[in-house]
Length: 245
Length: 202
Image (cartoon, each protein chain N blue to C red):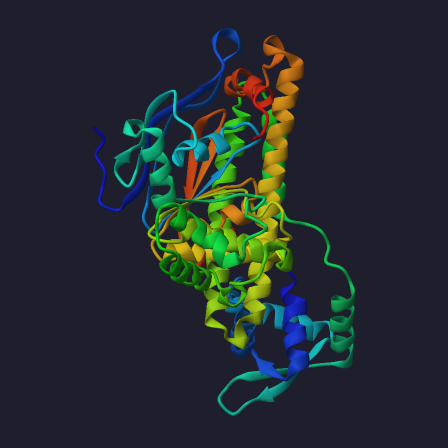
């Protein structure tokens, strides 16, 4: 049984994931320990094939570990059947992908309300919550627009609104700025940062140092292992002095 | 960094005495480069010797006020017009350190790269936070400080990207050299190199 603090939203305990068997087996993750608290923004960096996306998939219950445990808000995912897992994903976990994954025939508000409606929330209530989520990401005025009437940056904000709608406190973002120009990408980071500051636990997978720099903690993955972590000191004056400037 | 030209540029704005120059310089650059007052006076002496500034006399409170000469204004104009010479001691030290590390036996280059990357990443996190806080305060006086911060952010990001490239190149080399000849790299690089290619990015 894992010991968890009250604020812990995600815990990965000695998680390993191996693809294939025997001589062709590839260990995507090896004995990874990682926790993310409420209000904490963690970035995961590493070269291609280091296990970043595998880590994200396991954290959100999209994949199951070969060994080790994954806990979301103290619930061990290993103990859940497929239906319960899907319900937990809809209620507790929000995903943001590089290519947005929005439904083009739905409006922004309908896209955001979708996971709530799938979970049985009444239409009116779901829409009210969707509008609230769109307000949180700074685009309440775009609620009734369709995807082809929005820019890439606006669509990614809709995707983030969908990730945080309802009571979901874990946001998992996989290269969310990959399809955006750098200014728009920065806007997406601002929104993720604001969600963390408002109490969500955020895990961002990225290969861009300037985006990872928005996080409280940067985790470096290499060959499926966490090799290092960097936490901001939040003391720029000291840092400038150290840099010899 | 040219203290000489910075002080001249500030004197072009208006005549000032030594302490005022120091305060003005630090205000405009976000106190990124603290100036030693002794440095300021030494520099003023040299500028006067070279005919770029002149002493205007006492301001009444015992401060010696300096003003810029015509030659000084021409010097400032040239300074702004000319590109800055490329020399960056901290970056060069890192490049030299890595260049030596890869050529010496028994040095764990990957560990050096990772230690530097973590340190650079911490710096980048702090600069980014400072930028965020400064932007949030929305004071017009912060524009100069934001420019300096942006510069530091870009430099640090470039350093991290360069370290990523160094590492990728080392992994490539270790793979092509084969396990028997990978003496120059750490065991970690050689052993762990295979999965980098085996598991393509998802």
